[in-house]
Length: 447
Ligand code: NAP
Ligand code: HSE
Image (tube, rainbow, N blue to C red; front, side, top):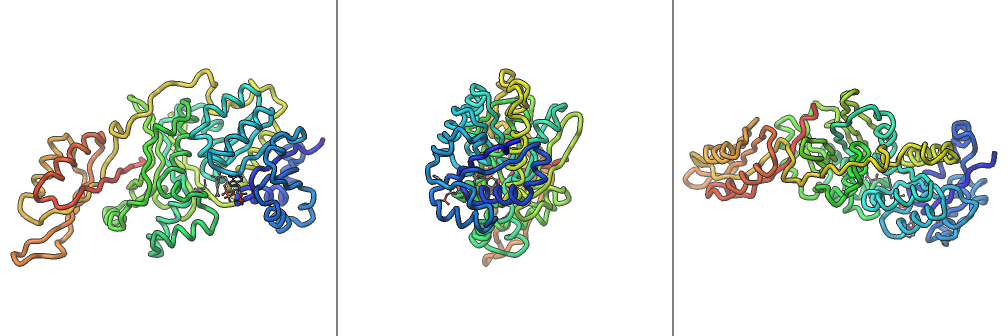
């Protein structure tokens, strides 16, 4: 049988990784897919650069791949069966993906931003044209988490997902903690290793992780993708002192993406999170990703692997190419639905605002080291119905002539609703003896 023909859009880290893995493992892949998978055309802004990259992977084959700067020519080419979009972003990538779908071509993409923001439009277009949009590489790089959620766990009512789903920020946090690197140096290293997004603020500010959490929430709970409802907080304002105090209390801080089903709705949030140091997730280091999924039947499952980089991501892209190759002649109604649930059975369960989220909290504040200050704080917390799980008071570092100084107080609360904590924080910050803003971090027991 003729090989299936792929048109590749973009030839950067993931595009080149995909070509490399396909070339290296072509025989094995052919035996699995039932026919060869061939990258026939590549569209890039700079064909000369792409030709050099192609030749560095496989000089003998490079000449057989046509490289063009005309993206539409590839998307409109009747000989192309699958368009692999490896550009990123929501601009030209969206236009090209919709055009490929309109031309009745299957699409494989690693672009989580595109699907988290425009997924509803893209999946509707794919349905209308009877084509597949496959996106395993969009979440957690090489970990087959989409396949696990959509197919492997299909018997379950999924209760929650919590994951380290951004390699760049996990790499930065690990390098800062273990090697004492400063933030900027660690970020540069992550960029040099090909982990970061074209705009690394997407990584640092939690946006990339929120894109991925949004996609997982849709597949897990059968709701539309709703990135605009996700709560997003990154690591740029995380203070080194909180990482240290958390360690003293037996916790590690990780940027977690969380999607949880509750009686009131779905929690969808990304933020730095204290995790007990003994949990497996707390020990996921570098660019590694890990996702915990809890299903009612299976219980807790954990998926771990490389979340970014050329070949780990290509592993997921090629798996999608094989899936599409196997299934593209199947009746569209009998393919696995894009978002796991039948498209006319999606639910309108609301995504909860962050005020309604339930969590444990780490609170750090600086107070005048005088009698009664702790009593005032605990009184405010008690009035808001918040109970304290642990408390750490640091020795005063500086004292004045009267022997009075300032001290850091760190409180760990039991689980409570966020709006109650915010109300208590307002009361605490109004105390005359409290000399700083309260730093608030959320916690997950993950048990
Ligand atoms: P990359 O290395 O920056 O490569 C992007 C490619 O697209 C390059 O060939 C680039 O051309 C081209 N491109 C960028 N903007 C373009 C535009 N406006 N018009 C035309 N071409 C454009 O990016 P990447 O890391 O491979 O990421 C590609 C996709 O995979 C993104 O959606 C990303 O989120 C996703 N992803 C990446 C990873 C990872 O580890 N890197 C992992 C999972 C998913 P130039 O060379 O001319 O700039
Ligand atoms: N920038 C992303 C990350 C790439 O660091 O996780 C993988 O999606």
